[in-house]
Image 1 (cartoon, rainbow, N blue to C red):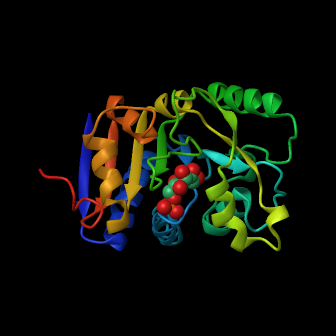
Image 2 (tube, rainbow, N blue to C red):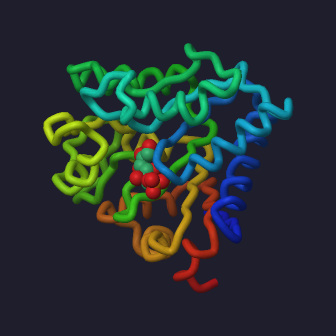
Length: 244
Ligand code: F6R
C-alpha cells in the first residue's frame, strides 16, 4: 500500500522525509537504513544533521547500506557516491564508519562485489527503511528501464546519454565511469519499508506513470506499487499531474 504525503515545496518535503527517517532511528536505534545519493535527498540529510546537532538524534548504532556506486571511481574522487555520502551526511553525524556500507567501486570483479554486497545486506538482517529518489525515466538506483526487472545487486553498463550528461563533472570523457554497481529490484523490494522522495514539476509525468500507471520494467519504479509499505513524499509540483 502506498501512502502519499504532499508537501508544499522542497523544504517541506525534506522535513517530512527526515521526520520519517528520525522516527525509524528513534524506534529502532540499531536499524539498517538504505540510503540514496542524487540531488533530491540532500535537503533530507541537511535536516537530519540539524536535528542531530540539536541532540535529538543519535546515529551511533545505525547501520547504512547505499543503493549504488560507480565502478572504477576511487573513494577520494568527488564524483563517487562514497564521497557524496560523507560530504552530505556521514561526516556530520555520529555514525560509525564501519557501520556504513557502499558498493566498492574499486573492486574490478563484478560478480564478487555484487555477491559480497547482497550477502552483507542479508547478514545485516535486511533493510528496515530504504530511501529512494526517482529518475526522470522511472529508474531507481541504477535500475534503468528494460525488458525484465533485474533482481539482485548487479553491475550495469551506463547508457551513452548518462555518460554524456556526466561528462561535465570530469576532467575528460575518458574518466567518466562506464559501469556502476546497484542494488537490484528484488534487493530494494525486500526492504521492510520504502520512502521515496520526489520534487519538482519535471518529475510530475514520471510520478503519474510510475505510481498510477501499469507495473512494468519499462518504468522500474512502478514495481513499488507492489510493496506493502511505501511512503511517497513529494512536493505539490511533483504531484501536479495526478488526480486524487
Ligand atoms: C541515487 C540513485 C538515483 C537517483 C535518481 C534521482 O543513489 O540511485 O536513482 O535517486 O537518479 O536523482 P535526483 O534526486 O538527482 O533527481
